[in-house]
Length: 390
Ligand code: NAD
Image 1 (cartoon, rainbow, N blue to C red):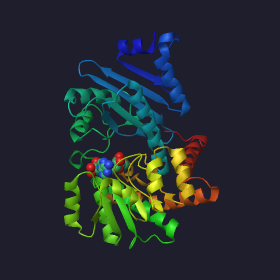
Image 2: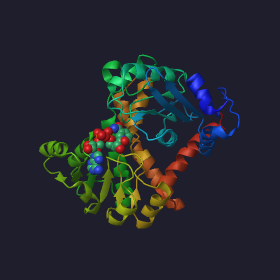
Image 3: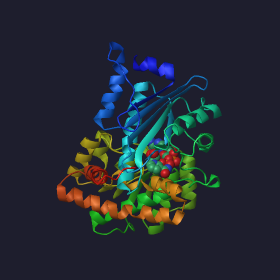
Image 4: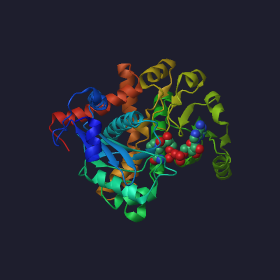
């Protein structure tokens, strides 16, 4: 039976490399290219489990990837996106789930890394039935995967998923959840930025420093509030003029710049809080800052190439998955009984972790992203070696 045939027959195909669940049998024929692709890709970065979910009545087509559960259940959001192909969706979910393992490990959380993607148009294809069915698939993993909100999802979908499974985090406060994580994420980015300033300038004071913030969204706005309060000169950009105008009305000292002009602006710190991959071949030639510290995921277009290039240019890069962990820290507190003060306190530890990573990077002469990756891997392997497993 080929992978595709089996997927049609069972509508629910699980592929495992961990020994707690049964791996499916796939015979090798010319038609098994998809399964070979999946398994070899899982092997490349040690993904434990990938669950393909298909439901004809609701049109649900989803993939849940569990990367590593050494430290705890795999927590990561569900993203709904009109992927051009299954291969693209698979690539994204494998990449994102692995990123969550590193983020949680580095934040000191007892959580592993996972992520889910739903293939579809979030503007036109969402139904209650689809998300309840998706919730049942999440539930079938018995708590090994805990979902949350990501791109294309809203509270409505999370509420529908919650009807079918308790394995959901980041719910609204009125449902006993931790609410919007953005203010906590912004606080973590602010702490990480201060640690970077301490390393780059010998003082963590941001007063008088010029910080270019890209993105006036939930995280960007809250970050600007911290920066203005401390007396930093803030340059702010967004593609939506109304968002900029609202912030300018509240905080008149903020200077608005055009979206593309942010890369050429004279600034000490560049803070990407909108999109990924804004540190790339083009912008690297233009950026004149000495620190990069922001909330956006996957800021380096090519982690190895651009991480090294930043080090060679003398720009201190605060790895995104290190300093934007406030959101996941906030979600993690939901599992123990939500405590907003404790979540903020734990987020503050990003400052010390960042100092430690910057020092390791300097001592070892390696890019900061690599020092952060190594610290995460060390924590996971030391738990494994001690026989501590979720
Ligand atoms: P958001 O959607 O509220 O804000 C993003 C803002 O970026 C929007 O105002 C948008 O108009 C703007 N934008 C889009 N393209 C732009 C461009 N080319 N130039 C300038 N501005 C542009 O999102 P958010 O919740 O504030 O998150 C910001 C970033 O941080 C995202 O990359 C997100 O993945 C990441 N992140 C967020 C959290 C969280 O808790 N919200 C946690 C971790 C990481």
